[in-house]
Image 1 (cartoon, rainbow, N blue to C red):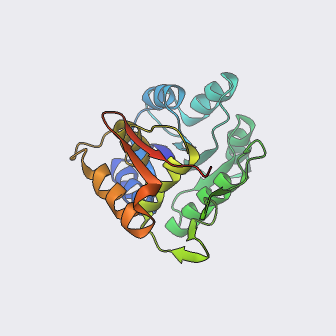
Image 2 (image 1 turned 30 degrees about the horizontal axis):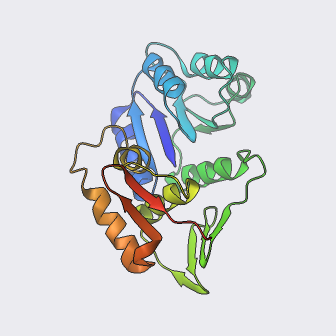
Length: 221
C-alpha cells in the first residue's frame, strides 16, 4: 500500500517514512501543503498522513480541497496543537483520525492499520484464492495448499500487488512505483530479485515473465 506523508518537520517526516517503509508500505514524503495537495490529487494513495501547520496551504485546507474534489483517501491528521476545537475543525474538514504531537510511533502504526481496515472495499474480500494459493491481504498471510509461507514485508507487498491484478501483465515500473516509492533511485532490477524469491518460496510457474512487458500472476483455470 502507498502512503503520502505531508509534514514540514523534515526529521520527523524522514523518520516516519523509514519506519513505515520497514513495515512494508511504499511511502512518499513532501514538506509543503500545495505540493501535498498536488501529489494527493495526481497520485494513487491508500492513506494520507497530513500535518496541520504547513507552509503553502495548511492541513485543514488541503483536507477540505481533497474532500471537495471527491477524493475519499483516508486522512490521518498530525498537529502540535491540542484541544477539542482543533480536533473538531480537523474532523469537520473531512479527516478520518487525529493524532497530537508528540505521539507514540506504535500508536501511529495502529491508527494507520485501523484506517486501512475501515476503508470501503466495495464488497471485495481481503482473502484472494488462486488455485492452491491463498493470500489474506488484511492479515498479511500467505498459504500454498495448507502450508503457510513466510514472506518478508517487501516480498509480501510485491505478491500483493500481483494478486490484486491477477491475470494482468504488471510492468516492472508499476511494481516499483507501488511497492517502493516514486523517489526510488536504486537499481530497477531489484524487482527481479523479489520475483525470484517469490518463485522459490511459492512455485516457479505461478508468476510468469512476459518478455518486454512485465509479470503476470497466473490464475486458476
